[in-house]
Image 1 (spheres, rainbow, N blue to C red):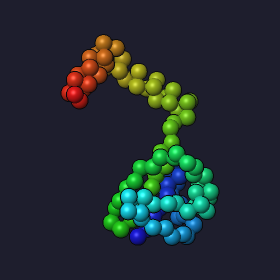
Image 2 (tube, rainbow, N blue to C red; image 1 turned 30 degrees about the horizontal axis):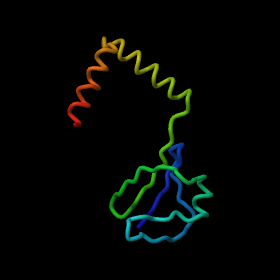
Image 3 (cartoon, one colour; image 1 turned 60 degrees about the horizontal axis):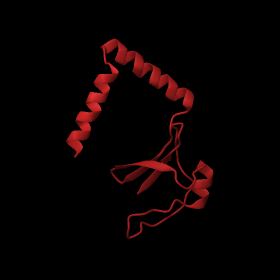
Length: 101
């Protein structure tokens, strides 16, 4: 089995060689040397992808504030272009919440 860790920048790195075990609860410990090398810390979250005999862990990182502002601006511009109003968004949220109950 191959385990790859993907850094926040999206670059794929082979982690330093180490072994670990799967616990009865499905938990895997990432060895300390690997955590330190990749700058991982307690509470970091991952997307886990299983493909063939490989397990890929991708660190989930929130966008930087500037990046988030750009995304928000683009979303607002697209909503304006499509004629979506705040009331439309509120209505859509209410509809989804009613379905979830």
